Image 1 (cartoon, helix red, strand yellow):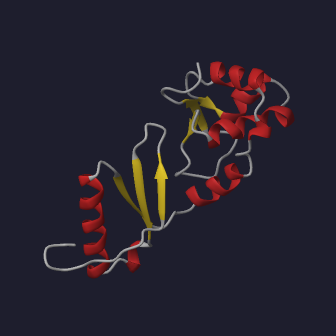
Image 2 (tube, helix red, strand yellow; image 1 turned 45 degrees about the horizontal axis):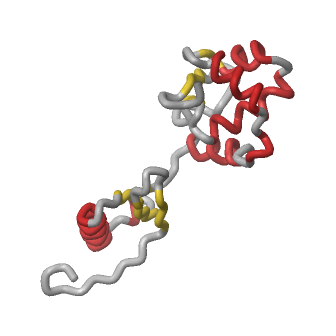
Image 3 (cartoon, one colour; image 1 turned 120 degrees about the vertical axis):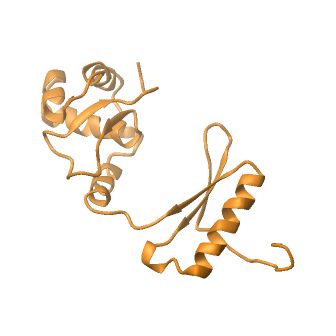
Length: 148
């Protein structure tokens, strides 16, 4: 209830973060957020804040970010994880380094690249996915709070 007016709204997603915080997510391209929708989003954000949750409005994912996420999503499964290789990648990328330079310091690129993409997906290693498609020269670094 918003004052005297009853509201109904079903968000697109609800997620629970590792710390237990709830996150309500609405996905709507910016060009489809009219005044009424903006009002609903603002109300939802206030309700979320009252109960200690976060509210996020996600608009369009722009290229190349969308393409990079699609690429990395192929490597999200745990079967791509190889502890010794990931540990070595974490050491190599402790300081920013071009992707391929770091990979070649670990081993054969055909064996190491699929392993690298998994910690990129998990945000243990961080590239800038917004500027250009993920490539050999993309700077990668250990995420703050990532694996030692």
